[in-house]
Structure formats: structure tokens, C-alpha cells
Image (cartoon, rainbow, N blue to C red):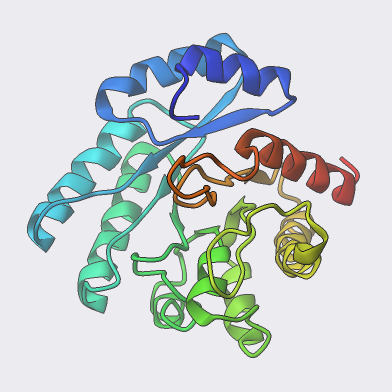
Length: 257
């Protein structure tokens, strides 16, 4: 919803029956994000990224960003942490930094499974899961499907270890040649949707067993770049809004909530 104001976006989101919004708000837009979601009775998840031309710059920006975002008291922070080209020790330093900020501020920080980050694939994350057992994840396994060029049927143990520490879901549906199918409603993507839904079912079942009060899910089929477009005109071949509403309704029906 990058092309509409926060005010318009929040009104549409509320009217569609969502409970909240997840927003990658720049520093100058965070006050507005908090105010608009509050005014519309919506919960708010904020995102963090870090950045910079080297590790030292990245770490400083990541730390400053986490502290600033936490000051707005979102439900939690969803973090795009580190890089796939940082060393294990560097990425672990960033994860520890996030843990320290979480303890300092009381705001939970989850690390999203995402291409280009330390968590870019199911095998790559295993050593982190072993060495940093307190780390918690946002599950966007569509990226892993793309990286592995498979639905991870030969990596069941790897996925299960991630499911055990995943507390938030991005219900994007990937396929072996891309992180997002063009339209999950289409019959040719039935198996792709079901493969992902079973992982989400498992996360939900784990949280239910632990008597967790809620499970949060962001319907995150993305814009142009993720959403295929026609050449030259760049017109999307399906409605991003309609797909995300479908995903919300699909999971509510599947889970009978």
C-alpha cells in the first residue's frame, strides 16, 4: 500500500476486518503510524532493517533504529537482521544486540526468515538455532522455497527446528522459482499454498499447545517486484489487495476463527 496515505490505508485495513498493520515506517513516519493505527483501533507491528556500507555502520544504525522503534511501543518489532555475506560472528553480534534491546525496552524483537539476511535459507539458519536458542523468528518460508528450489520436503528437520521458534507468520506463498506465486487463488498453485499452510498450521498448533493468547499473521503478498507485472506497462497481473484479503479469509476459514 505504498501509494496511499497511512490514513487511507488504515481505514481500508480496518474496514476489511484486519486487526492491525505491519509497517516499515521510516523514522519521520513512525509517529504518524502509531497515531493512525491507534485512531482506527488497530494494533501495530513496526519493522527494522539496519544499513550502511560496512559492518560497523550497519551495527550502529541497527542499534539506533531498534531503540528508536522500541520507543513507540509496537506490539513487537519484525527485524530484517544482518546479511547473508556477514560472518556468523557478525550476524550473531546483531542478534545479541537485538536481545539486549529487547531486555532493555521490553519490546519483543523477531528475526524474519528472508533472502539476503542471515536467515536466507533453511540450512543456513541451523547453526544460529543451535548456538542462539533464545532467538525467535518471523516465519516467511517462501524465501526458503525459492532459495532451495523446492518445497523443502527433503529438509523436514531443518524446517521443524525453525517452526519451534517462529512466533509470527508472513503468509506469502513462494514457489521453487520465486518468493511469491502470481495468484494463490489459481488452481495451479494449490500445492504451493497447501505446503505453506501446513507449516503455518504447525506454528499455530505449537502456540495453542503452549496456551499462547494470540498468533499474529501478516498477509504480505507484495507489490511490483514480488507481484508479477506485464512488460512495458508494468500493470500488475493480479490485485495485490484482493490477494491479501483472500489470504486473511483463507486462514480464518482454515482455522475456523
